Length: 232
Length: 157
Image 1 (cartoon, one colour):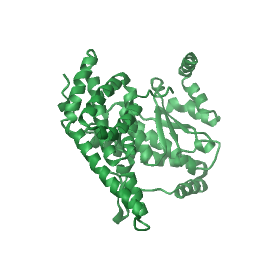
Image 2 (cartoon, one colour):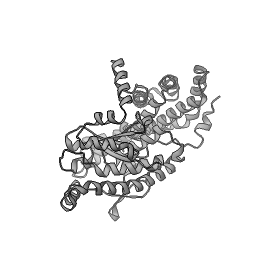
Image 3 (cartoon, chains in turn blue, orange):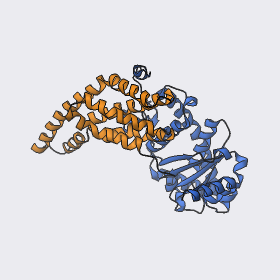
Image 4 (cartoon, one colour):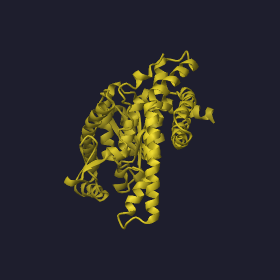
């Protein structure tokens, strides 16, 4: 027998922590926007982001991407810490006990509610040692100049720090497709730095995301193509 | 917040409400009372409704792991709670944002559509029993919203 009274005894069945109407709050008297835990949020004007890109480009040229990546990396460490604290508190369990699908849903909602666009994670290359993140409507891509190389350096830095802390491994992140180049979404590959070197070479040689994935895991891409042919 | 009430409040920023607005406001308040009664009926009968559903679910899936049945029950208990609040607020978006868009992929990942579908079929008659016909007509769209989100197979990537 299933005792429903036990299932509902603490009356706590949580939903989406990041539901935008309750997540974004404020102390309007003091001119503050805060999240539901009272941590300060900041509305960042696009013009400022564009100015950051342009200013760095003027001052340090090709090193601008590396600086933005490092900024994103530091930001990602704090972001991870806050995310984990808030998840633990709201869902009444440590993140280590959360299922991957639940954690991923929370991250997707978090990304969206903060106005960073949409986020998705493809775990199908996990066995080969890679995670593939996809974002859309990225403000970083929109604010960057149009170039023949991906431009979401800060986003790549955030993702590398976030997933390094989540997995306990030092992961690097390489962006392989960018909305600033006219693509419909951004792709990021996460993996150990030495294993991502072929991906960096692929970006240098202006290969597309699919071609780079073939470089990294040729067997898996071949199998996936066979499977999709079988399906259709 | 009530979307209609919000519209009236925005209208009142610029002028006094007109007679038509006042009448709309009056009807909203009346509707709010009715929704509150339906909400109370759902809240007060939660354990009874879902205990009957749980017993029938066990009969329908005698060999299934109890943890999976409990998980499905928790999904629908939570969904019914959020749907009740959405009904109270007359705001389907509340249900979508606060639960469904976060929960749907989790249900899909656990491949529990069959159990969830049976649970929905068992739940609906219990809900009809505790609600009057008018209250059920008010609540039904939210149950359909849950059904459409949780029981529709995810598209093949």
